[in-house]
Amino acid sequence: MNAPLRGVVPPLAVPLKNQEIDVPSLERNLNRMIEAGIHGIFVLGSTGEVAFSTAQRRGEVLEHTMRIVNGRIPVIAGVIDTETSRVIEHIRQAESYGVDGVVATAPFYALQGMAEVERHFRLLHEATDLPIWAYDIPVCVHTKLPPQLLVQLGKEGVLAGVKDSSGDDVSFRFLVRMNEEAGHPLQLLTGHEVVVDGAYLSGADGSVPGLGNVDPHGYVRQWDAYQRGDWEAVRAEQDRLADLMTIVMVHGVQGFGAGVGAFKTALMLMGEFESNEMPEPVQALTGENVEWVRKVLLKTGMLN
Image (cartoon, rainbow, N blue to C red; front, side, top):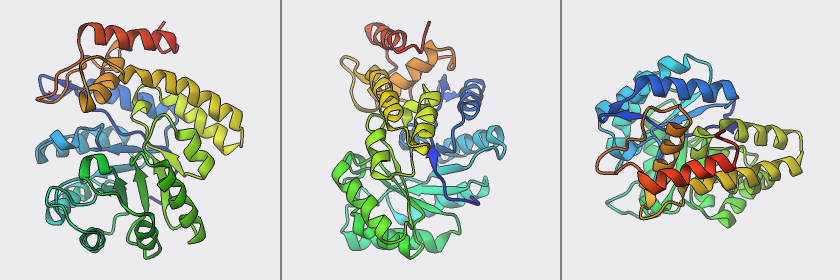
C-alpha cells in the first residue's frame, strides 16, 4: 500500500458450491463491491471462513481474489492461526500471492500472557516487510489486546493498524485517543456493522463490515458523509444499516451460522450467490429463516 488504508474494507464472504469455491459468484460479488466504491478488501477473515480453511483453500481464495481485484484496491489477508510459527507459514503464502498487508490475532489455544502476545507480533514483524494489522477479537481468541500495547507497537512500526472486533466501545475510544496523542501511528478500523457511526465520531479510519457484502453502497455512502462532516447523514445511514443487520436474528441458529449464514442467504436472494451453502459442519439457513432474511431485505429496500 502506497498510502494508509482508510475507508470501507469489507471482509470477503466466500460462496460455496458442493464445498468448493463458487468462482463466478465470488467474482460477481467482489466486482459489485468494488464498483460500489469500497476502499479495500479483507480476505480470510472471520466472514471469509478462515477458521474452516485448509492451506489449499486459503491459497485458492487468495489466488481468485488477487486475479479478480487486479490491483484496483488494496487486499489485506488474514493469517490467523494458533501460534507464531503457523502464522508465519500463512504470511509466506500470502506474500507469494502479492497481498498488500496481513491481519493477525493474538495467539490462541495455548493461552499465554501479554508478554508472549507482544513477542508474537514482534516476531511476525521480523518475518515480513508487509504491513501487519492486529485483529482484536477476544470472543474467538480469548485475549483482549490492550490499547497501550497496540499504540506502542504502532509507534515502533511493528503494527500498521488494528481491526477492532472486540465489541468494547470504551476500549476503542481509549485506543483512538492514545493513538492520536502518539501521532496516529495506527490506522484504526471498526469491525462492527451497527456502531460504525459511533466509531467514526470517535475518529476511526474506516470500517470492516461483514454486512458490506450485502450493502456496500450503504457503507460507502456513510463513509462519504463522514468525510464531508455530514453527521446527520452518517447517523441516518447507520439506522438503515442497523435495520438491515437484523437479518442475523434467525431462529435456532447462533454464531457463525447465523451471522455469515444470513449474509450468504441475503446474497443468494439478491442473485449474487448461487447458494447459501456453508462450510462443514455448519448448516445453511433454510425455511422460515430464509423467509426472515427475505422479509428484512424487502423492508430495507434491498429487494423489490
